[in-house]
Image (tube, rainbow, N blue to C red; front, side, top):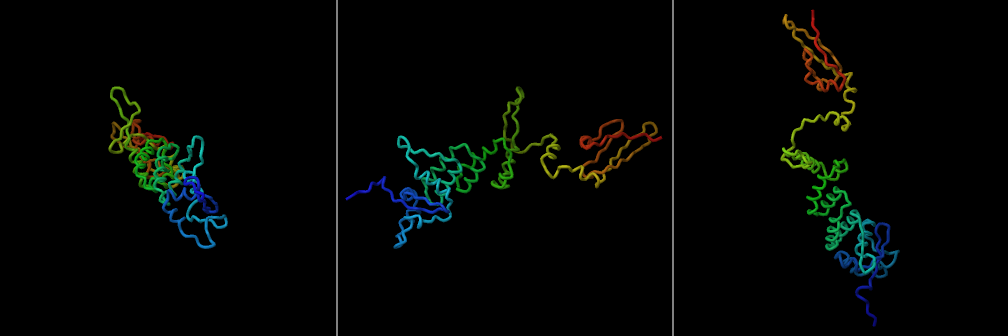
Length: 288
C-alpha cells in the first residue's frame, strides 16, 4: 500500500476570486486559518464537488484578487537556494496580507505581517496611521505620529481626509509649540524644545497669506471701486493756535485701512499697509 508524504503531498483546490482562478494547496490555507479548515471540511455535494475544475471553483466572496495573491505569496512561497524562502513585499502588499489574515483569523500570519511592516521605511506615515487604526495596531500610533510631526512636509488636503480634522488640528497645535533653544553664550545651534503653548511672534504674514490663501487674492483691486476710505489729516498752527484739516477720500475696504498722518513729517501709525497699496502719506497744509 502506498503512503502519502505528510509534507509534499498536497490536496489542491481551485478558488475563484473576482474573475481570477487560483489553484492552491489547501494545507497552506488550513494550517493557518480555522475559517478555511471549516470551509474545506464541508461534505461535498454529490456530483457537484467544488474546487476540482475551472468550471466549478470555490468562490471567495468579498475578496480582491490582488489581496489573495499577496496572501498566497506568503503562504506558498517558491523554494530558492539553500531551502530558504525569500519574499519581498512592499508596505501596500503587506497591507493586503494583513487584511486577509485579519479576515480569515490567521493570527500567526497577522503577527508576522505587523512585525515586517513595522521594520519597513518606504511608506507614507499617514498610510501607516490609517492601517494602524483599521486593524487596531496601537503600538504603531505614537511613533508614527512622531514621525509625521518631525517631517518637513506640511499637511495636504488628502492627509486631512485620511486622518480627520480633529487629529490634524491637534498635530498642528503640537507643532506650533516648538521653539528654538537658545544659549546665551553661544547662540542657537538649530535645536528645538517643546513649549507648553504656542507663542506670539512679530512676523508679518501679509504677503504669504495673499500668496497662499485663494480668498485673499486680489482683495484690494476687486473692492477698490465700492467701499470708501476716509483718511483724515490734522495739523496745529503754532503761534496762532489755529487748526486746519484736509480730507482725502479713496475707494477701499473700510475695515482694513484707517490711517492717521501726523504733521511735521511724522509717519502714519499704519504706514506699512499704505505703502503696500500705493497710498502716499500726506502732510496737512497750512491755511492762510
